[in-house]
Amino acid sequence: MNRRKRRILDNKHGPTTFIAAATAIVGTIKGEGEYIFCGTVEGDCSIDGPVTLAAGGIWRGTMRGEDLIIAGEVEGDVIAAQRVEVSGTAKITGSLSGNSIAVAEGAIIEGEIKVTSGESPVHFEEKRTELQAKQDADNV
Image (cartoon, rainbow, N blue to C red):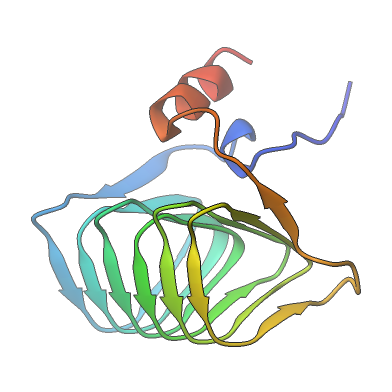
């Protein structure tokens, strides 16, 4: 059965690339698959797959990916080919665009929000942690 999962982290995308909290990256990142950034990035990315900026993570530059989850701080544009989830811990200073956008209570967005599907952004209250979402995805 091919049913679409509600949450980005609920979908399987193969192996995950983790960037640790103590890591700082400067430059352009291109890749494929699932990426989770917990550290600091100064540069742009173009990822064919889901990209997560974890709570406490900092991104200075443009984030471009298939599906994006923002829980940290972004100084730059966030551009998703499909979906964007903005957690309550997120702060975005720049434009935000995607086919569908969900914004949790408590998130701060200082910039334009553009939903490319023409729908309105969805607001939600986060009820589970990222770890719980990852565990749920592993059990599918």
